[in-house]
Length: 246
Image (cartoon, rainbow, N blue to C red; front, side, top):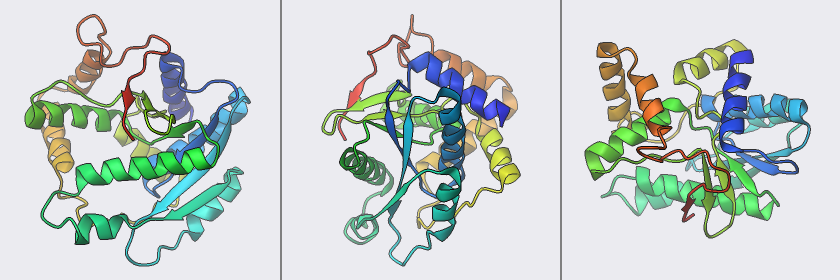
């Protein structure tokens, strides 16, 4: 857990993710990334002792979802949990069957989370994106959009005014997998029908293939994101985080 908190602390210090008095909504999907993030933030909260947490979970499955394990996990961490039912499945897989659901799903989930965070009085929303998420997004942008782009560790949403932060942005996915197993986190099965059949999955496989040929590839790509002199994608200057529409 020491390494996980080290990644979190580094991201916090580099991008000023958490400020004194922050009330942070933590997006909990039931996956390994968000559960480890919630656990790490609950420990970090006691180290800093100047911010509070509120877990938020969206239920998107067309069938009833058993959230009991997540509720007990949050209770153990002394973090209140709000569960919100959404019509995302119907919109994405019944009304939008001819298009890839992933881009729309990401936007809608983030919008729902931001709106819920705002309603709960939270000025920030923590999402569980890790290092590989950022690098896979970078590859997708290069290959499919013809641009050098990925999400920022700290982004202000223009409509709600909620700031999205990504505390595990420096953490390798393999370390998250290891910690999820070590801590026996209550990971839920991903109910999405598109899981494992997306462009992101293609990028995950491509990144793995390239990394076998070039072992330091991930470190080099991460360094490129932080090379402000050339690219300025991950500017560390305070109060300069980009704004996006939520």
